Length: 120
Image (cartoon, rainbow, N blue to C red; front, side, top):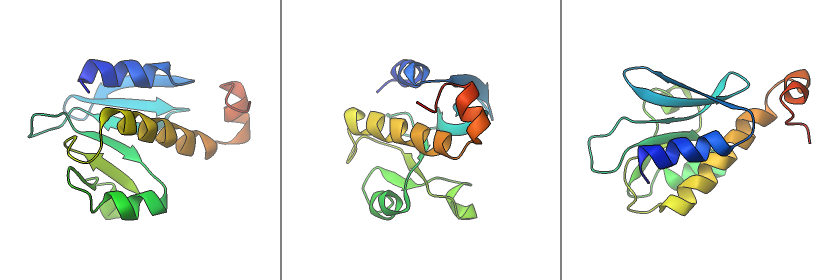
């Protein structure tokens, strides 16, 4: 997945906003809350960071090409960073990005969900 493909996928999710911050990271939000971050990488694949369930976190943190997300996981949050496609292909990454969006949107106040059309 390229950065453009990542941005296009995240833009297609409901009620999202995009900002480039934190040293050039592409940050995607729903209701003002971050659900995906991409752009930092020291490998040939760009790194994508996203929220996951507790079970997915336990599984993914041990997979090649994935790791607990720097800064976020160390604060007890269940965020994973995919640094290569070694064990997670692009289709799976898109599924996890969509699930991250859903997890974050679900935690928004009901009024915010309604205003964004996410209560359907």
